[in-house]
Image 1 (cartoon, one colour):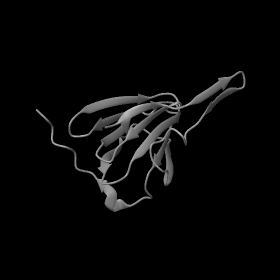
Image 2 (cartoon, helix red, strand yellow):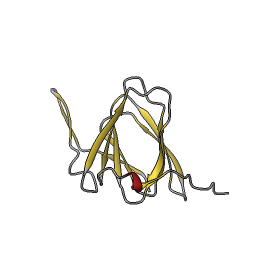
Image 3 (tube, helix red, strand yellow):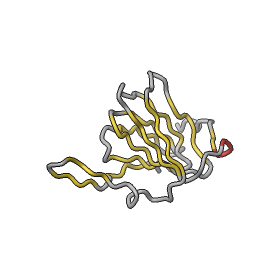
Image 4 (cartoon, one colour):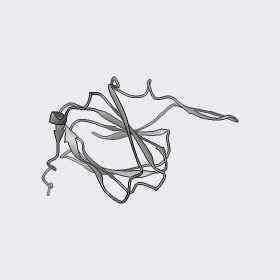
Length: 124
């Protein structure tokens, strides 16, 4: 199930330093970031095996998640907040602020065969 983590952040008069590596619950194999997004929706998939960690380094965005049991909406608006997505988490990213930079850490290298685009049926 998707969930938020508060990343360890050290703050003093010089600014903030946020630590990622000891907070992410999987080995990181791929890193990518999304920026310059217009009003389009990104994502719209889940995975067979890939775990992901999403961090909005700048600005903000919204992530809708559905794991077939529960639907959630998460707002990422600080670089010390991290959303962990499990493979079964069908997700969409939207409402990107003009300055948003969304970094995603993944547990696997890119493999188009790992993507499932079909939405879950709505529960009643």
